[in-house]
Image 1 (cartoon, rainbow, N blue to C red):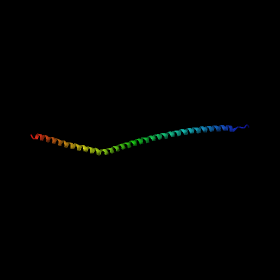
Image 2: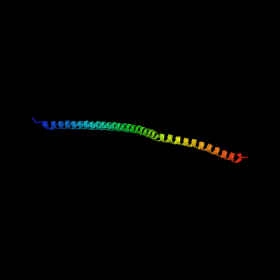
Image 3: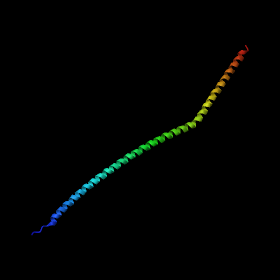
Image 4: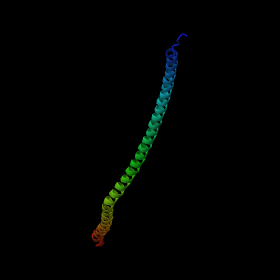
Length: 121
């Protein structure tokens, strides 16, 4: 009876199975890589969106702070110059009253002189 070499036929089957397993593992690896890349892209997109929100929040907060500081500075300036302005207005009013008094005094003086000059007549 001739001897059949089972190792040769068995080796072919084992090699075929090994190649199929390698191809299957390669497919799984590519699938895993694709999934990992998608997850990385999703994480990056989420981070970009979150960064955008943080930047917009910071801009909004800084604008509010700026408005508050400007209003505070305006109020402080008004508080600083208002007493001086009131004092100046008071001085102007006093000068106006003084001028009016002097004006009437001057008119009376002129009238008296005219009367005195012509009063003897």
